[in-house]
Length: 238
Image (cartoon, rainbow, N blue to C red; front, side):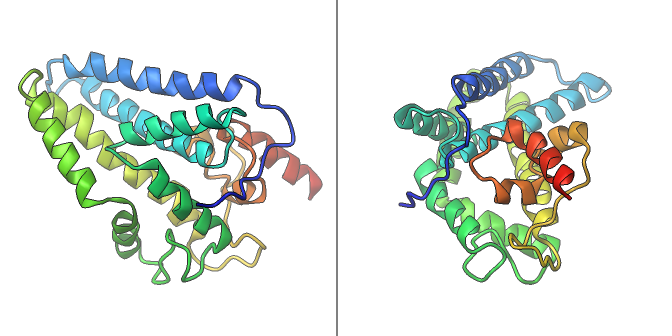
């Protein structure tokens, strides 16, 4: 297990916990509402619901990610508990399996030792490699068992459209905005990371500010909801 978690230079107080729990609560509330929605493909609310639930799934993973950096809570036990629970809600991801791999990514970014990187640079080959790193047979089995239990009580179509589909779409969102775009091509900076142009609204909507990826690698002890500030600070220094 990797222990070299960099801390923030300021106290995160209770803010990280409040934001993390809010994402979890919104995920449950949204799913509760959508699971009982009559699916009519002519209804724009169906598509909006898929997008919202996808974004909230991404938020669960980002919360687990921040916990891996020790920046959800200064209380280590609470920090890792929230990270573990958030990862579990994201299709039974195992937090303590993700933990060392993510820190390997930071230590060996864009090298053959980086589990998130693929030298081909090709989107689909890289995506499949990314999925193989993080999806296990146990996850698939647990999702299958859970689905077959839930469909005894809940509409099958709703489970597929609002519970399973957004989870898959979220992996694409996380990969494209959080891995592929930041690490594709050549980067001659010290973090081998690209960063999107400053646009705080798009940075949040696309992937919780992780388009500011150089900033994350430069300051891994900064929570996602403060990366916009790191972006502004770095640009002021140029």
